[in-house]
Every structure is written in C-alpha cells, then in structure tokens.
Image (cartoon, rainbow, N blue to C red):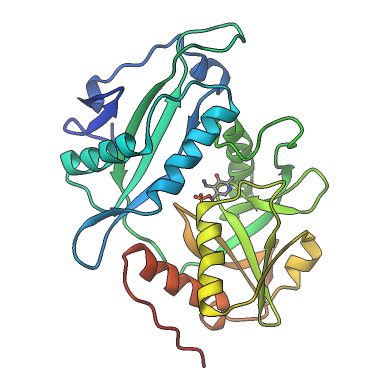
Length: 298
Ligand code: PMP
C-alpha cells in the first residue's frame, strides 16, 4: 500500500476487476524468479473537455504485444479489450491523470522451456502532469545499456530494468538527478527510462534506433518537429558532442519532456526557456490534453 494503492484501489487481473490488496499472483512465477515479464508505461490525462484520455493507447498496447512476442510469451489479448479494461480501471478508481502499468507475466516454471499461457494485470495510480521548470543534473553513467546481441532491447522486458535501477541509483548516490547511459560502443544511448535529444545550431539530434528503446514519446517528438518545421536528425552521438550542445532534454511517458541543467557538472549554452526543447515541451503538453498548439517563434 502507500504510494501506489490503498484499501479501495481496484486493478484488472486476468479478466476481473479485483481489489489491489486482495489480488494474488503465483510466487513460483517465472517472471518473479528471472525477470521474465513484459510491461508498459502509459499515461492518461484529463483532456481540455474534461474527459479521460489514454495517450497513444494503440501504440503502447502494440508495443506490449510486440514485447511479449519477442520474449516468446503467449499473448491472447486484443488492444481493444485491454484498452477497454484500462478505461474501466481508471473509472473504478476515479482517476483521470494517471500512470497506467500493464504487466504480462508467466506461470510457475523453473525451467527455461516456453510457457503455454501468460497472465496479465493492469494497475493505475494517480500521476499529475509534470512539465516542470526543474532541470536535471545528469551524469554519464559507468553502466552501459544492455548489448543488443544479448537482449532484445526493443522489448520492454522487466529484467532489462535491473540495468536502469543500477544506473539510476548510482547517479543519485553521486548527487545527480539522473543517469545517461552509453551503448556498448560508448555512444550516447538513453536515460534509465527516457530517450534523449539535443539542440545544436537550431537543429535537434537524437540517437538512431539500434541501441535504444525507441520510445513512443520520442516518436511523438519527431512528429511534433515535423509539424512545427523543426529540423531533426537521428544519428550516432558521442558524449563530447552532447557536452557541446546548446540544450538537451529527456523525453518519455513518465518524464514527458524535461530539460537538462548540465551533464557531468557542465552546463549548456542556451537557457532552457529559449531552447527548442521548451517549444517541444509546450507542444507536447498541449498534445496530451488534446489542446491546439500554436507556435510563437521569436
Ligand atoms: N528508454 C527506456 C529505457 C525506457 O524505459 C523508456 C520508458 N518506456 C523510454 C526510453 C521512453 O519510452 P516511452 O516514450 O515509450 O515511454
């Protein structure tokens, strides 16, 4: 209980709506023992008309399916039924601005043979939009992202997040807000739960797919750049290049769009309020609540 649920909280568990405090899963589940589960991180927002809207729900549930398929986990659900279940959980908990966490997990199985069935739960908890003015002090992590030859890194598999936990805890223990991880070749990859963009000479850059989780927010940022005529390029990026950036930001479902104060203690040339990242942040803020956004470039 505590932060995520209380005695009244309801979650969706394998076709039923049950109290979180009474829900049970099998302690012999392969998911718990080996990190063999897949999940999503989704948000819902109260839109401009006061309605609850799950942002990019098809994209998130498509990715959940793709993650399960990549992990050889049976996935018998349709997006439609899971989206309907998600709206129902939100309604039953009376939450509009929420973080939504579906998890697909495995039955009891201590061997490494594939399973014949999977299970699912969907939890929601209140999360208000952030889009704050706080800027992040980021540290280049000594931890690298998992090698794509060892893991299917485009899948959102639970076990992959041990890497994120190690990197994030390490950065915080050293007095930073967040970690930036490189890939196995030392190029810029991503944050522990967010993708990265930087601005240089009026243009945005972001690591190309291959060694990152290609986020849904990242795709939304690319979409917004296209709509707003901001030029953006996907490429291989070094830490040195990033330190020379005019401005940098993370983007992700939970983080939304959040600017950086510094990397390894080194600040950036532009004020966040004057950066392209701020324009993207405002456009994203409008997009998630289905509000029209008009750009005011000075
Ligand atoms: N990278 C990693 C490692 C993540 O965990 C996340 C969060 N899912 C992201 C990037 C951003 O993805 P999204 O925009 O789809 O939330």
